[in-house]
Image 1 (cartoon, rainbow, N blue to C red):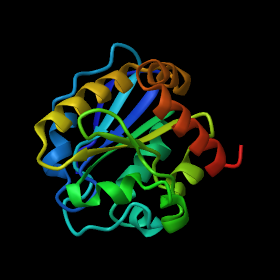
Image 2 (cartoon, rainbow, N blue to C red):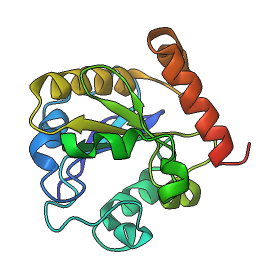
Image 3 (tube, one colour):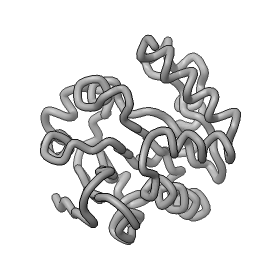
Image 4 (spheres, rainbow, N blue to C red):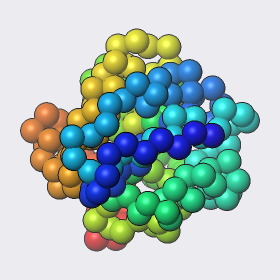
Length: 193
């Protein structure tokens, strides 16, 4: 497993892809080809685990397959954390269903452009390894969809240059006001703020 470090200083950002199963086919190239940030540090793990699919919602994932993620978080203390996932078209409704919070305990993803979805990371990692001020995002890219992958690459490059959670929220509110409000509302409800 390769951990790449680009730049130096704050803010520290950690981007991970290829978290389980064959997701690496749709997500890892984005991190292999990313340029260093203009300011601060960017750490990438392009392929976390290309083996058996284990959900990142299962806290055991981070104790086994995702141990390198935890090690990297503890070592570098990022304030911005992004997971890149991919989904099949059959799973779209499950990911975006407003009842997802009641079904599996995590808010629904918001729909951006070109079948890219925006959500939060698993509660286990969010609550145990990041402050409430940290920016923790999960992007879902539609499998085998070049437009989706290309758009995700653009949004990842935007996040790469953000210096804080608030800077990303400003961007999101300008470009996707409805999704921004939904994401903020979900965050506040989910974390009891």
